[in-house]
Length: 574
Ligand code: SRM
Ligand code: SF4
Image (cartoon, helix red, strand yellow):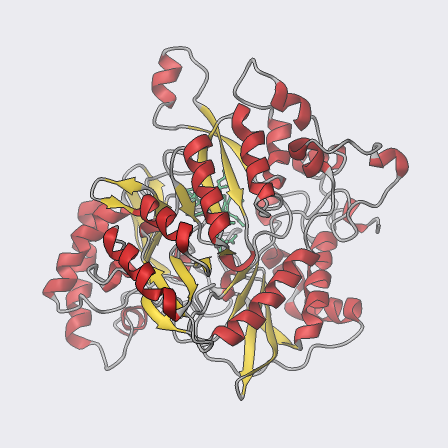
């Protein structure tokens, strides 16, 4: 293993997280012991850091925080468990397992994430092991769902170009497998595998790609199949854009340096769209991914975590430095990028027939939350479908769900169940709602500054009449909300976005590109609901009256002068 990843490129002392990783003996730490500790429902901070690599971390129910504090009780500790599946594809059996685990060990709901993973909330410490064991036995994993490693690899679940989708998906899986952590810690801690000798004593090389301190920060990869940019490829650290010529997959345009996270008021942190740097054949991309990861491993900032993503590594040294370093490590140069064109980043709902003759039904799942509600037994309906379905389920990058690969002879049966449980493809909702996403935020996310998932539907309810009045009910407008500027629902790429600042207060952003190709810009700062509605109403009216044919809302607000266009290298904030 190279020594490089033990050194920071700048001379500043490494952050404490680097110490925790280094001392952890490949992600073991004292997790096995602390999970056994029955005195508290919590775990120590150092272990919680490591827990992320295992796909989970300690939260507390923020709704109960003050009350429990008053009663001198420890916070209502619980764990979030994230289960990854490359490209979001799982079998009906795996769906049934998630459903079972959610009801038995978590809060009775499943959360489909913006990266095509599952999240469970409210798992108690004592239930972590059986829950993770069930996930493992169903051939899914929580390992590397969080932490300073490559995360769930996203892939367009494109139901209307099935053959190409299948091929691109296979490459996404290969890249994902190649970058999986190799440590046996996961098996020892969760699956009761016998502990191997301390690998530090043996000087074993447990992680040929990551090394003993893993990456300086999380790392994200997405595969897009134009014209759909549903994976928001420009938000990824590393993106692959499929190049299809004459119906065949020729290779991928490679993009680097995307990322959404920022901090309010700190211009040293910023969201950024990735840049295309060239073209590679399918057979070359695993190598491209590995070498990109190792560049970030060796040069990423290990001192300041908020400056540790690949986008900053590249910005600090320049894109030419990066492509040069990549070519050096690969031993060859990428070809020049080929032309590509994206049309949208949303999902296409309802039934579509794939080129393989199978059917796919995209359901609208508001903010990815699967649970039974009064009058809408979504979770039960999906369970009943999973019991008879022989195809797959595909989690989309927009927090929706595709019942995929339905054979023609089975379609009627699935259709009947969809009807029986009233499951919706969003047809009765506005196009705005169908193009909406919100992050989790309260009560589980410790970083939330404002509500998101719980509040967004009611805000949409108030915006919808304005659109209706303006004759825009069926106009696709991408709208997103997050409870803080970390950007988990990729709001910086939406045409309208709300980013939480304080309880009930949001920064309003306008002007993102409809196909996820352009960042938006702040229009109003720190405003509450009344001002949000007052601000949007005249703009919506203006758009209805003066938009050009085919002009998207995000383009219009720039042309009409509400916000300036954010071009490459320009400042994002205001
Ligand atoms: Fe995220 C942290 C939820 C996608 C940027 N994100 C978190 C944590 C784990 C909070 C924490 O660290 O304490 C949130 C858990 C909340 C909860 O209670 O469940 C959280 N992120 C989510 C999910 C579940 C949002 C959702 O509603 O679906 C998404 C899970 C993805 C997955 O399945 O792997 C999720 N997070 C994203 C995305 C979008 C994406 O990846 O496409 C981003 C922006 C893209 C990017 O990374 O640049 C994102 N999350 C962050 C950041 C800011 C990272 C940065 O570079 O600054 C944090 C905070 C951090 O890492 O320190 C964060
Ligand atoms: Fe939490 Fe912020 Fe991510 Fe929302 S954007 S889930 S509030 S970290």
